[in-house]
Length: 436
Image (cartoon, rainbow, N blue to C red; front, side, top):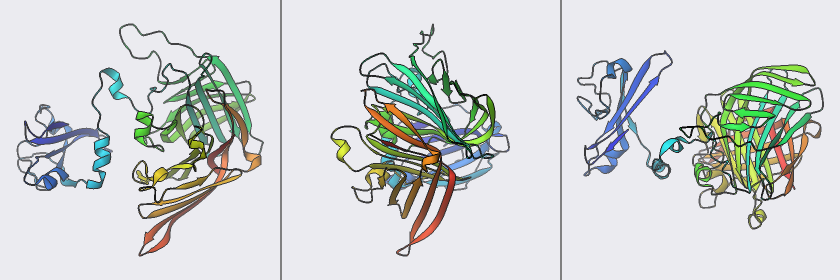
């Protein structure tokens, strides 16, 4: 990307990618700001698509905007090999979010950090980091939960621990713990700052990275490969994750993951092949005072993630639960805007949740749509797990990887709410409720 509106009179983009036909292409775009017409010149971007071989040999300084690339959509003068051209228009309502996303580059690898990177495990007390995976075997209906924690208590040495759980349709749920283990400190790598092992969770009993899940308890063992190609799903606002604006943050770094391998329960092999589910991260000062969580693959193209929680801080725990809801369908996320579901617009239209057992609900509306979510955790399909915060506080998490969920999505048309989609999942949703 070249940003030189003053020195060179242009802003240019150049993206190289491999298309579905297996061939490399280059997408080029260029705009020249005109101060007499700043709005039009800055919100339109002529683009063209060329095979990569036709674009080879161009210097990085000669990004789009050179010979024959006219602002007129579709014009291809003196442009051999051009496969397509068009005109992009930028929406002004996205300008604040776009401007807020800009960062000055940091030196070294830190500038490449992402929600999946191991950036929240700094050596300071009163911090909790969680890696968890939940998935369902489509052949048997069995649900799985792998939970890994790195705890830095207020008093005492940091440690790792966690658990694994299996929720079979024809048997009571089985849950088994591993750890706690003292946190192993990796020696520095000579000549560089690159970690000696992949980013993620590492303990003597379990490993959780972007591509692999391995672990063992007394009753359970697992060795799984993880495949995912979807972008992270930010339930909490991106700014809250980067700047730690909230006591805890949550991100689904692989919202449409597939798990393959073997889980063993009391020595019996439970094979998995492409089981759908998700990987997620939590980081902060500890668990919420009360919370509810849902991950649901509603269909082959739609995933719903919900977190509704009351903060554990003394002042905030008296406020109503905040709701962080993201519905991704066809590659697009709703609601638009990171803060829309918890805060609404100027406090109006905020989503509302009621974290309780055995059934909890979330309702709300945004952008001409409204949603109603009802989650049910049957007693015979859930487990109760004790949580310990870094400050020693206790909570109980009631989890089910075979929960039921009903979702109704409506759209406002001609002054009336009309049903757009309805989903009714039985025994395939992943959900929990945390209480104290």
